[in-house]
Image 1 (cartoon, rainbow, N blue to C red):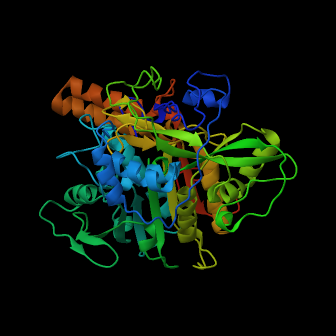
Image 2 (cartoon, rainbow, N blue to C red; image 1 turned 180 degrees about the horizontal axis):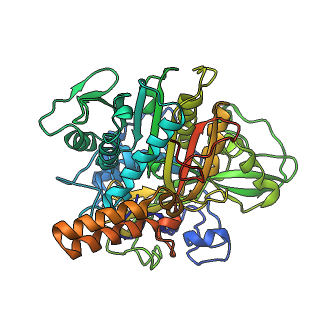
Length: 537
């Protein structure tokens, strides 16, 4: 998500030293790919995930931590995480991210522990594109309109779906824009919002339906009626709760959603030859790393607590990160042997497998299984799949986020932000926003693998997409109107806002953010608007 300090530029946190029981990661910078995280050339080790049948409860461990007067955790969630790690051993980065963002106890989006907390806007942690200018959401609405026109103007069965809707500002602008085109507006059957946060669900309902509008609950999710055309709106916690029907035409938008999905991180290491011995009964639950010849193997990066009494100085918190927060509670370390994730995720794509031959030992990799699941779901809804056949593909998905546009696999991209400042992603869990770079090539691969009825366009820079969609012309109309109605300064504010969205300078939103589209497969006969195609009459 976007912040006063662009969220796409929230440099990944330095990984802090490991406790004395393991080799610590060096705090000195290096010219290797670890330098972005502030890592040196040394590697660290951790125990593997074990103790799946632990007899001790987390509650009991919390009492033990309460008695440890030398360790004060920065948040209730940090305390809970530490207790869990104490029992099970270091946890995968994906587990840490998921807990930090969506835990019921102090999760960033789902368990706020601060009264009247709002993650968005100048008073929150970041500002998103729809909050910067209404033109952004209007052009998304126009993009859906052009796809509806290009695909035959279906008169019913249209669905609008947004994943990670924030305050609901984007969907509000999309719906308001579509109201200007009654034929499409009347073709919409329902609106679906995929949202895990109860607080954000209510904010979206108040904006899209009105504060007095009732919200009811069912097995599917939460229901209300939109202020636009009295359309039904359904909120679900997962996209899997939204029915898939072959006659439906889904228009899906994911704006700054994929960057918040949890990732697994790995490093490729050279494992010396060792005597191959059959695992003991106790070891059979864990993968063996013993080999008879030297091999390259992936090792997962795990999260564990920092040493007690750590400070920003002892942890070498880099200058790019604010030291006004408490010292990081946690750190990354490298597993000493294979984990179940390291055995199959790095082999899940030809792009990942190629790293062994193209990079070799020291290669880094980030994999987001949830991104693949969502991309596959989008593709199945649009193009059909063996589980959900669709005789005629229809609909479209538009993904806007930040990440490499050249097919590069993201590495070392974990970032954190708090109150528009870059901070350690391991400090104040639950109060710190976490995000990563999006693997757009991976999304494209997952979508086309899930359905033969789709094709992918992009990614292209957000600045190019918005200009092709006519942002300059639309913003010009709004700026002129604002100047006439509210004065010259209001007009200048409109102009400043839209230019920020297309800024192609270093770190500019128009350069860092990318747009990618998933459409019905058409043998390359038509490119969508905003991606080099023409408006369809």
